[in-house]
Image (tube, rainbow, N blue to C red):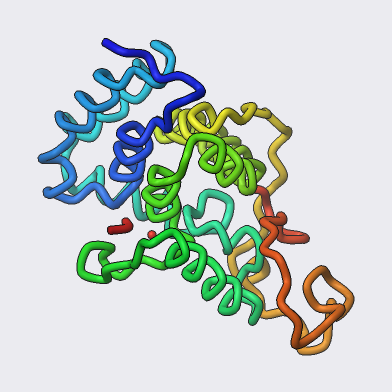
Length: 237
């Protein structure tokens, strides 16, 4: 069994985690043994991380399928704190999300990859499983740098999952580890009511925020936490 080094991108493990974080329907549950094998064979993660991920895959296989699917929806699709759509943590439902999504798509295309709606179940480019599929294609340092851009979001989602005692928390910790990023445990901020946290900003509010000082000019992408929202949902062909 060969350990992954700093000179190798842990592609199989990143793809395994990408699948593991998708909706746990019958198709996913059927390939869970393959996901377990990929994680063990590449051995890019510590034994502790792999044991936690094995506990998650076994729970997904042993529990009632309807409960597993319902829990996933409750966890990742209701409220922003545990959302796997990264731009919900950055832009919420503001108008800035559309241009950011286009920029991310262009990043994928510049890497020679194009989203296939038939294989992504209609998920958006900022969905973490899609992002991880792209990261798995990058060179080692580029992969670590890319994951580092949104490490603070992963930490926040991990905190929220850990607060809910969800076995999915280990998957977020594993992504951080594969990206060479530190797991930072922070005090959990109470999540605002859904209507409040998903409210559309005022039409002319925040005009001095980053990326708006020079309208009409290209701006670099930066993953920044959404102001006022709790800190801590979305494959790629």
